Image (cartoon, rainbow, N blue to C red; front, top):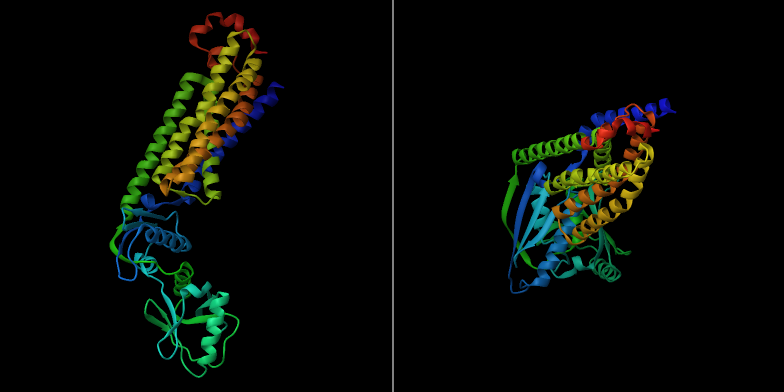
Length: 417
C-alpha cells in the first residue's frame, strides 16, 4: 500500500513537471497575439456630413456594425472597432503586414451599381443577397453575386432589355467590368470578373456582403505599431509572469512545506491546462489577457490555502493525518466553490458588456478560475492523499503544521496511520 502510494505520487509529479517544461513554451508561443503584443495597424476614421447623408448617432452605429463585419471577415486576430466621440471610429488590426490592403477594404463605401447603356442605375448593392469569391475552370478569379428575389427580377429585366448591349458594373463610381449581354440572364445570379488575384476577389466580396456605408467617412490617421513595441510589451509580460509564478511557488513552500510543494506541482498543471484551453478556443492574447492570467495564478493557489488551513484545524482536533486531509478537502470545497462562482459571474459580466481587450481579460480570468478549482479538487487531492499514505515523513511540521504546535511531536507522530 505504501509503495503503491509512493509510486503514484512520483508518477504524478514526474509527468506534470515533464509536461510543463516540454510544452509551456510551445503552447505560449502558439496562441494568437493582439495588437499590443505583436504589432499591427491603428486606423482612425471620421464621418463627414454630406447633403445626401448627414451624420447622426444611428448612422455612426451602422458604420461601426458594417466595419466590424468587414474587419471580422478579414480573419484578423481580435480586431477592435469602437466609436470615439460623435464622429470618429477607431480600428485596430493586429498582425497586418500590409496596412494599405486592409485600409482599402475598411475605407471604401462599397456602393455597387448596375447601369444600362444609357448610364441609368437599375440595380444597387441593396438588391444583393450574397457575394462570394470563386475561381472558374479557366483559372479566372471572379465574384459570384446572388440577388434578392426583387433584385433577381430587376437583373432579369435589365439583361432582357439590353441583349447585344453593354451593362456597366461600378463600385464606388469606378467601373469594375462592362460586359456585353448575349442573352437574358435568369435565376438572380451574376459574376464580376477582372480580379487579378483570388485575394482581390475575396476582399471585393467582403465589401459587397457588408453593404455600403450610410455616411461618407475619411481616414484621418494611420499608425503602424512596430514589432519593437510589441516585443517590449511581450518581454515585460513574460517577466511579470515569471515573477508572479515564482513568488507564489516560494510562498506555498515556505508556509505549507510538502503540501505547498504539491500545490506548486498542481499549479504547473494548471498553467498547461490554461494555455491549452486558450489554444483550443483560438483565443487572442493581449496585455489585459496576460494580466488576467497572472491574477488567476494567485487565485489558483487560493483554493489550496483554504484546504491546507482546514487540514491543520482538523489535525489539531486529534484526527489522523489522513482523516484530517480528507476533512480539509471536504470542508474547503463549499467555500472554494462559492468564492470562485462570484469571480466567474464578474468575468461573465465583463465579457458580455465589455469590448475588445476587456473581453480577453474576462476570458482568461474566468477560465483560470474554473481550471484552478479543477486542479485543486483533483490533482492536489490525489497527490496529498498519496503523500500521506506513503508515510515518507512523520513529522507534522513537514505537512505545514505550525512550528509552535510541534511541541507534542512524539505523541502526534503516532496519528499518521
